[in-house]
Every structure is written in structure tokens, then in C-alpha cells.
Length: 289
Image (tube, rainbow, N blue to C red):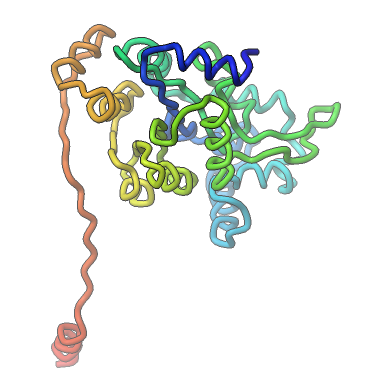
């Protein structure tokens, strides 16, 4: 393993600009959620899983995104059945977005003058993520929720949850270890468990990308990209950070065998109207006639 000092020395003697690229896992690099995959494996209905997760979220019982971890620790239906090997098995059943490996490669060495270290930060169990991304992202670049196990493989206790503020803490640790300035951090996410870390990255002049239309993150993120392929996530990075123009980006994608068929950029305004006091009184009066 390379020491922290060696990493910082290497970066200081590398003329490229170094950035840290951190991505969520569920629904950001994947199409399905780890909780749904595990529930299906255990014979637990989607409705039951959603009911339990929603109940915890409504009670603010756990950090946002850590609902599955709580179920694995405390819910009899999950805790009694799930063993460590089941988490690895679940990872193989996760449906990944295409071209994650190509994204890793491009960020690593295909953007002239820049290098991005690719990390995954997720509330999902680390075994699930490592299994799903085997051969794509190195294991030491993957940070998920960690459990302590009994000899039987049964989950004994929680070691560390990478959810909510846990993501912020992990990202802070990574930037310090890698010697990356706070304004050289890129974070990609899709949902409520990404809010705290996105706000922190924005506050420190980093760059945030949402990959869903969820108001929770789309209103916070500096850019939003919607696609069923991982490659378009690079577009805001190439434009805003590397200063590329559209022809360069199209050429890069074509070198990987992809033509950009549609590329629409829109400004989305979420507007909710309610009657003012006077208008409401008139509406009631009309209804009573």
C-alpha cells in the first residue's frame, strides 16, 4: 500500500490537475436498489420492504440511506436469514449501468491535463458493492456500510455506516488522505442520502452532479444528467472542469463506439401555486353559490 506522503509526493510531481470523483452506488451506478434485490432473494415482498423502510424514514430513526442496514441488524425477517455470502450474491444480481469501467478509464487517463481518482461512497453493504463492481473499480476505492460478522457469517454489529453525515466524514477523510483540495472534488448522487454530502461539496466550491430528477438533489446539484448509461455523467465534468466543447465530447464518445443521438439541456423550474387569501375567498364564495 502506498503511504499518504508518497501519494502527495507523486501528485506534487505530476503536472496534471488532480481531482477526486466520488459516486453513490444505488440508482446512481445501478438500475435497482440493493434493498429490493435482497428482499427478492429472501422472499420478502417489495411492498413489505418499502413499508419498513418508509416507516424508519418517517420516524427519522436512522440516517437517510441507512434503512437497509438497520433492517439487516434488527429486523427478524432480514437478520435471521442474511449471511455475509448472501451480500456477495446480491452484488452479482445488481443491474449496473453500462460503461462504468469506461468512465473509470476516462477519468483516470483520457482527459488531457487532468486526473480523477474514482471512488464509490454508498450506504449499501460494502460486500454488495465490491461484488457488483468486481473488475471495474478497485476494492480499496469502494466505501460502503461495514458490519462485524460472527463465525457463522451472521451479522453481529455495525462497524461504520456510509450514509448521511457518514458520507461527509468519509469524503473528508479521502480528500485529506489524497491531498486533494476541497474545490477539486466531484460528487455524483441521486437521492436523499446524498443531500448532506452534496451541500458540503458545494459549500467548499466542489462540483455536484445529480443523476435523477428528484427535487431533493436536482435543486442542490450544480448539474443534472439523465441517462441509462454511465458515460454521459462525464459531460458536465468535461465541459465545466476540463473546458471541452461539444465536438470534443462527441469525438470521445465515438471513440468508445457511441454516437450522441440526443443531447437536450433544459432549465427546470418547479413551481407550486396556491390561491392567495383573496382568491381563496372568491373560490369559496363561488363554490357556495
